[in-house]
Length: 105
Image 1: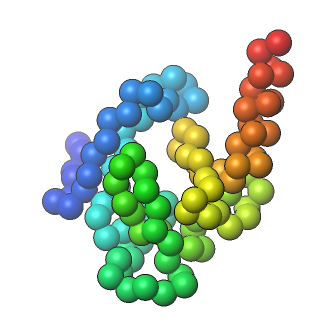
Image 2: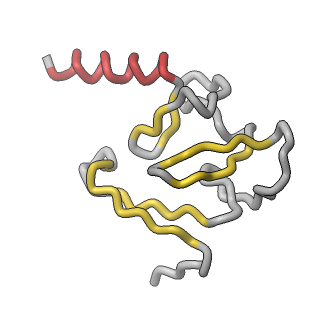
Image 3: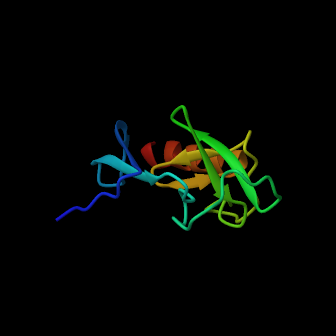
């Protein structure tokens, strides 16, 4: 049984698929970091939070969560990519793309 809290936003993204090829359903609760799902105070401007835009919706993340899944570097709100269900810096994104191309050859 699936329980959805009142402030959840649901996105069905047929263009974004899991590694098994299934379309993703993304649940992002308002007021929670979309990465770790811990509560964040979106009205506070401090250095521990970063604001990002995902599918034309703005979210507030904890800076400690907003890191590249491959190399672990801090991500910038202006320079990051969400691929499947992970976040990457542009350098690692290109490496993933290049490696995918090599595996198809």
